[in-house]
Every structure is written in C-alpha cells, then in structure tokens.
Length: 599
Image (tube, rainbow, N blue to C red):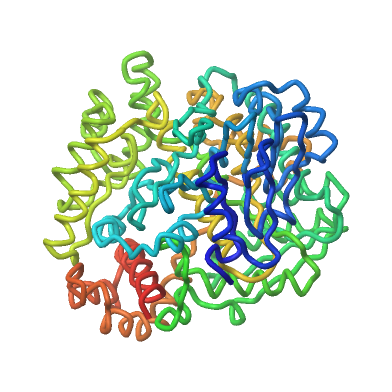
C-alpha cells in the first residue's frame, strides 16, 4: 500500500516539505499544491470525498461529508484574505469533514469538534506533517508503541484521550485537540488556534429544540443528498427512531432500516421498533433474529484490528460487521447510526454541581430524586456537589486515587467526568506508568473542555464516540457510518439549552422529543423506557468465556508486565456482574490491539 497506507498528509509551503513529498508519493496518489507550486495535500484517500476550490492565492479543501459543491465553495472563499477568513467562509456547513486551507503559503488544518474527523502531527525528516490518523505518521516515523500510554489505556472508565489531544500511543506523534486548528506560517512554524467553543447554555427548551431540529435535519440531509439507498439502525430507541423519520422526511434516498433482536424477550425495544417501522411504509425493514445475531466478543481470541489505538468497540466487531454486510447486500451506500444521542439528550448530572450555589432549591429536589434512584444518601450527594474541585484539582485527586476503589456510579458522575481507575489486575508497574502519563497531562496544558462541568462531561463522551465512528470507518468493510448526532452543529445546538429545562421528571430526553415534535409520530415520542441488554451480555459471556480466557492465558500485556492474567480471569466467573465484564473491556481492547501490532 505504500508509506501512507492510502491516507493523506498536509505539508507546509517549504522546500524541505517539497523534498519530503517526493518520498511520500504513491502510485495513483493525488497532489494539490500551494500557490507557490509546492505540494500541499498529498495522498490517495482525499479524492472521492473531497470538495476543493482555489481563488487567487487561496486553496481550500473540504474532505468528508458535506453539502458543499466546488462552485459554492469557490464563491464562499472569494473574499478570503487570511486564515480566520477560511473558517468564516464555511460557517454553517453541515456534515463531518476536515477543513484544510493554504492562504499565500500559510496553512490551516482542522477536523471536527466532535472528533469524527481528527488531526495528528509529527516531524518527519525535520518537516512538520499533519494527517487524519496517527497510524500514518507512526508508519512514516517507524515508531513503536508507547508502553506507558498503553498502560494508561487500561483505565476504566477511560480517560477522554480523543477529547484532550496531546500524547498518543506512538512516540513522536501528537494529537491536535478537536476544537483547535493546526496552523503553519510560511517558514513552517506551528501554532494552535481555538476554532470552536461550546455555547453559553442560555436558550430555553423551546429555542434549543428548534436549533436541534434544524441542525439535525441539515445533518441528515448531507446523508440523503447523494440519492441511492441508505441504511439506518432502528433499535426502537428515541435516537435511532428520530434519525429514521428525519431521513424519511427528507426524501432523496431509499431507506433500509436494520434491527437485531435482543436475547431478552422483556426488552421493549422490539415493540417500539415495530411501531416505528409501521409508520415508515416506504422503507424496507431488516430484522436480524436473536439466533442469527453474532455474540459480543465473538472471535475475540483471533481478532486482529490494526487500528491506531485500542478501541472500545472491540467486543462489537462481529455484530457490527454483520449489520454492515446485511446493509450492503440491501444496496446501502451509507449507514446511519444513533450514537451520540444518549450523550447529548440525557441530562448530564454535573449540571447540579454547576448550579449548587445559584439554584440550591432546584439542585436539592433533583439530587434527592437521583440519590433515591441510586440508593445513596442525599447527604453524600450534597457533599459531592457543594464544593466540587476545579479541573486541575480534580486531576490531582485522580492521580492520588488511581489505584483506589471505583467511584460510586452516581457520585462519580457529579464531577467533571466519572473518575478513571486502574483495574485490580493491573500490576504496580502499570499503575506507575499510567500515573506518569496523567502527571504529564496535569503538568502540561490541563484545560477543561468547557467552563461548565456538565458541558465538559458531555464533550468528553461525544468526542470519544466521534473518535470511535472515525476508526470504525477506517477498519470495517461495508458502507461507511454516518453519525448525525455528532455533527458539530447538532452538538452546539444541544449544548445551548439551559440544563434546568432539559431535566424534567417524568419526561425522557425532553430536548430531543421537543425537537422531533411533528417529525416523529406522537406515539413514538411518548416512550419513557430504555432497552437493556444485560441478557445479551451474559449470553455472550457464557458462549465466549473460553475464547476470552484463551486471550488472557496467552496475554502479551501479561508478558509485558502490565497485568496479572489470573486476576483478570476472575472477572469471567459464572456470576460476574455487568460491571465486572465491562471493567474488563479496556484490557481486552488493549490486548487485541497489542497482538494486532506485534504478531
């Protein structure tokens, strides 16, 4: 495949970069040039999903899914005179894409604020280079995996590495924070510029719902605009149901919905999915029966995924691959998924800490309800929200408690994010390594993603999900995924709502249901339950316990001194809880990743 494995790189407008471009050239690769004539964008994968334009000494490329045409982009950049003008020129463009520009030799590179498109950078032969994935740059550098960072990936729940940017698993490769743009001057000197910031959450429920509806409609329109056939998950949940009805209302493309059945007959997702399908008579509906649905963790002992980092969806590979295969067989060119909906529209608990002083009555009422649901004393909840630490202090607490017991499910979700912990099977050496990584985060640019804790909390989840979509699309065969809830404009709209108006007792996801009023039938918007898949997870554990044990019996993590495999196998006992099994997931992901890169 060549040095770049079919990807692309951006280069500064320098003689040294021009020389490097010759080394990177691959058969069939396409090259766009600075106004000087030197190579700017080099690679193979930017051709099919690229919209490019040039006016005078300005060149702009939008790589990914958007509604822009070359003519429209050319008109938008006609008045651009500097790099900030490029961002202003594409303002309001829906979709998921990289924005690349060169203006008289100065370069602008950014991805998506949701991390569905990312930017990484490294110095190759002394030349600064940017790419959409860390693996491309690691290959150019000949880098080997960073053992310290691998240890830090054992954390459960994980640190939001995709949200924070910075150090990667590949020495010499740095991730640009998703809300930052990478810029180079004419001499190749580098700066980071904040191009996106979360909105002030001051809109009423009605106002924010209108913004969400408009943004989601435009995001879905970028998926249907190409015509042909698209597919979409239709689990029965509000998130996927809303996408299906929005896609159906847009027209322009035939819709195929896909649903796999749960092993638990009490899971009411099926009931709600059938109700939604009945109101979508023009769509084709595929239902994968429970006996034909691959287990979670199926084939895990032989799985190889050469992703740039361990991925949380490692347990889902067989299931996701099966869905995409069926969607492709039905003619789908693009598969819509509902990821991001839970994160955006389920009220984020940390808002109670944000409002503890300004709205104590509201906070006390809602905290009591949550504490009752989670069987925890209200006084404990009050302590958690009364004097929450700032972000840097929270990081210091995390360093101290890294190998401590897991935080309580509710109390841990009242701060900046659920506090990560090393698993009980991590060795002292692994704990020491992970602590060193987090100390580096604290000593560096330890900056929260938003001033409001609840927005930081949501953005951590959104960016981890967006990063997962990005890697799914570079790994699995079949139609690519589109995740409209990760569209930056949808995220911005959802974060603009006053949290006191989106946390309403007795109403499920009121911001989404208000936004979808008139798009989704009222009967489907009335759902107040959420399907659970514990039975599916336990069935998978029964069937896949042997492959999982085999994975741990021959563990490379254990050989490297990072885990005690005997203690890890303890999470697979016949009475394991969902928490036990989920706690093992980061370890399994790291093991599969390490095997994929060393065997």
